[in-house]
Image (cartoon, rainbow, N blue to C red; front, side, top):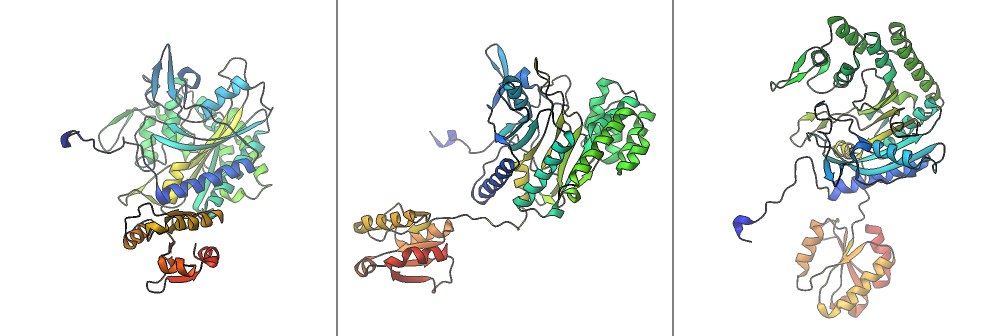
Length: 464
């Protein structure tokens, strides 16, 4: 291949390579999350990356004319297939397909990549890892939803966050649904209203941005126009008044319709259960969250960080919720012969990772290997004996893989890898049955130590 035709290395927008410390932290987060899922009684489930399109639908797109515009779909013979965009829709299909074999209360967790054909940036990716925990079955919704919030809190604290660094916000979709019905907002406009409310805390929106989306249209700073719900003045005014209410008792006094009152009562029951545990102080009501996905039916939850997050240019950004979810009464009943409610949460692992990388409060046990240096090819067999001895004693270790490089270049390699220790043996060491260990993180000039070979393991363990 000539120079002009050589490929330029790069990735499509919204995709990312992860390596070194970032990947180590991600693996730590995954271990904590999975251990907590198991601790709270769930069993694992893995579903394929692709699903039949009509089985999972799409609850993402805001373009009514093209409801599959925010997912990756492909033709597969006489069917369309779609890369999963979340883990809840595949769960619904799985439960409907296997419900006779599952327990009456099915707790499952899944940790897999999902794919969304949407604008990327600021901790948002087009391929990202989700970690989901769901409870499917006819259960006490108050108990199940309180369990979810306890799981969120326990997991984030174990991931290394402090209790004042996150807030678990909860509401109930029945509350806003009752208001929409009371205001006689047509079904075709209701989804636009819900999406408008959901954008309240997004950058550049606020009350004014939501009001524009409730009315005829909204023009953003770039001049782009988004078609609104086209509500009348009374409808807009009532919704904006609702968004200003912060207290559950105040809400109870202001919304008298039966559906809203039902949602309020369900929240009261939820908080009563939550009081039995130790997480009440971490959970707050927030009636402006409505969750963009249309399949949530009542309880909803969003977990937000209470510290600033910046992008690689140092600009403060909003990364959104790091763990969200809610209850769904109809998601599984879309399938024939099945009518089972469920509730669940999803950790956005890569979004959480993006934020945590900016905090200097995590200790990572990297366990980098000890390097066995090769001073002379004639002793190669002896170097491998040292290597085997280290590994047999559960010490991560490697041998330098080029017998032609001098010691200086071998140590340069070790320093670039940030390895902790180098084992150095030349003719004198082998003659005296000793080894020299170099503490690569020690003070220069004081970091070499020659010891009897029998003391190698104990001395190395002191330095790693």
